[in-house]
Every structure is written in C-alpha cells, then in structure tokens.
Length: 423
Image (cartoon, rainbow, N blue to C red; front, top):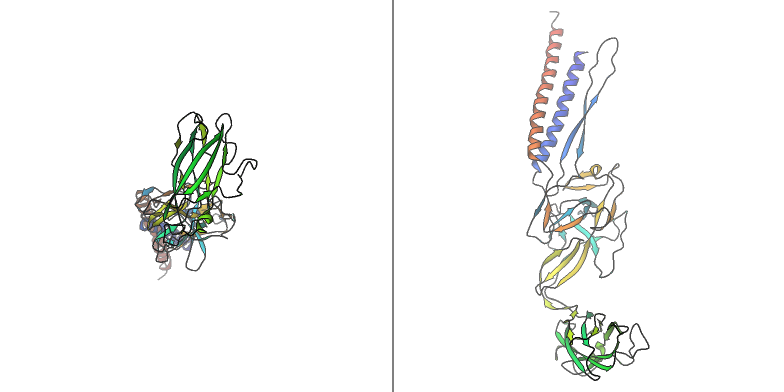
C-alpha cells in the first residue's frame, strides 16, 4: 500500500464523516420544523484491485437519503386551518413562481389576499367545491387546481333554493282534515320569510299539500299547471300513499317565487326590494301512519346576513367557511398527491419536494381515497427527527473522524520519514 493511498483513504473517511455530521446538524436544526423529514448518510466502500502482493487501499463513498415516507408525530393546535395528513400523500402547494410542489407541512393561515399559505410562503392548492359534484381530477398532473382562497367581504347572505319537509299525516283523520306547519326561508337579501304548509286529506291515502306566504297569503305551490315529478297522472300537489303509508308520488314540490315577486307586495320583508327564488322542497320523508300529525321541523339552505367567524376542514379535505350564525359554507376541496417512491423525491428549500428521476410519476386525488390518508384538521405533523439518535450519531461520527485523521496523520509522518532518509 502506498503512503499516498493511505492518506487518500484517511481523507476519504474524514470527508464521509463530515457529510454525516452535516446531516446530523441539519436534522437537529429542524427538530421542531413542521413536516420535516430527517436526512441520513449511507456509506458504501470503494475497493481498488491489488497487484503483486501490494494492497491498494480504497475509500468510502456516501449517499444522502431522506426518510420522507416515515410519518412524524401529530400534535394538536387551536387553528382550524392547520392540517396534518394521517397516512400517505402530500399537500400540493404553489410557489411565488407558479410552480407546484409537494409538502407535509400543513401549518396554513390566510394571508392578506385570503390565500392559505404555510410558514414558508407556499400557497395551498385545491379544487373549487361544487355541491353534489366531484371535481374532475387530472391524476397525472396539476391542471384544474387553484389556490385555496377564503377571502370574504363583510356580511354574507344567501337566498334559499332548496329544502326538505317531512311529516307524518294521521291516516285515521277524516276526509277534509287540515294539518298545518311552517318553514322559514331566506330571500335574496337574507331576510327571513315564513311559508305555511297545509296538508288536506281528500280521500283515503290521498292528501293535497299547498304552500302559502304567511305575510301576504299568496299561494306559492303548487303553481298553476304544475305536475308532480314522478307520477304525472296524479294532480299537482297531491301526496299519494300506498297501503303501508309510504309515498308513491310527488317526492318534491316547487315553490314558485315568481308568483310572489310578480305581485304588488315585495317578495322579501315588505319595503326591502328583495326577491324570493324558486325553492324545491323534498317531501320524500312524508309518511301516513296511524299516529298524530308530526312535522319534523324541516330544513332549508341559505342564510341570513352573517360575518365569517372561522374555518373548518373535514377529514375528506373539504374546507368550510364558518359564519357567526353557525352556518358552514363549503368552498374548496384540498387535493393530495403521491408518488411510488416518496423517499426519492427531491427536497427543495421551504420543506417542499419536487418529482425526482427515481420517485415515480405524481398521482393526484383526494383524502380518504385510494392510497391517500385522511386529513386531520387542527393538527400538525411534526418532524420525524429523534434527537437522542442524532446525538448518538454525532458522537460516533466525531470518533470516526478523529480515527481517520490519525490515519492521515500517520501517513504524513511516514512520508516525512521517507523523505528524510537521505540527508
């Protein structure tokens, strides 16, 4: 073995241990960084061929590996927009340059423009929410994604467009019996308006239902010429039951707001100038059994004027705006992404990752579907760094570095002896 080879081997060992100490330093520095994934240094030997009985010392090579697929501990917070992923997947975020990245750092807060951004300034991406419609996901790309923006301008009101009314009609009531209940709905300005539902028994298993505006007495349903949606042979507004007391026709009734808007009386609270939209009321929960008249109270969408009081996120990643009156309005659905080999993603500044050559193709989807985990709101995934393990690794590397430096120093001393043989 040449003395130069001995020194090169010692230098190789020192360089390898320096790399390991570098990852240890980075891990300790980010022990409290949300969603950080620890780095580790893997060693591999470099072997040189021997010849003529002379041994040629090789060296050691290092490769940095990131434990991206290893989940960190979960801690709970008081912020409704903090999110942690329990299971596989990454949040999709957008940088200032418009490029999209993956991250597990879910400490999101609304910025001045209303966009949800994490502590590194990356904006959370998702799909605009449409009730009853699943967004079309581009499984191998980010097309269709938009920044999750929760900006709201002052008071917000929404007129009613659909609702439900259930009740039990007493099958023992004589023909001509009327049973009444009311449902409060919202006009275009968020004013509350009371609608009276009147159920009239016209024959066995047959009831007529009408809806009138309580303030004006205007009949809003059924409208002239209206027909039920399932059994056109039945008269408009007629509830037909079978022998078991279950509905066989008219699962919903349409309240015609235009009938009220076209009168001389304003549709909303008198003097407001508001209008009442057409409202579809689902009546499928109406029954006819041998029990007293029993309405279920009904339900309706829309809300009166209210300020934004906070935000909520469910386990499927649907982001809601919460108003002071308790109403929740869905705005966005958070998109998740994953790759076949998360540990081969390429780390970038800001605790985000980009696709690597060996990571596989990025696949997008939603929480709770496929290989994607669920989203925990009001929680954060912590760093997966173990301080005790890192300190142990630091001591080991320090000792190994010192030993390699002794090898290098010994080689240098022997070389000095060789140079000084002739004086």
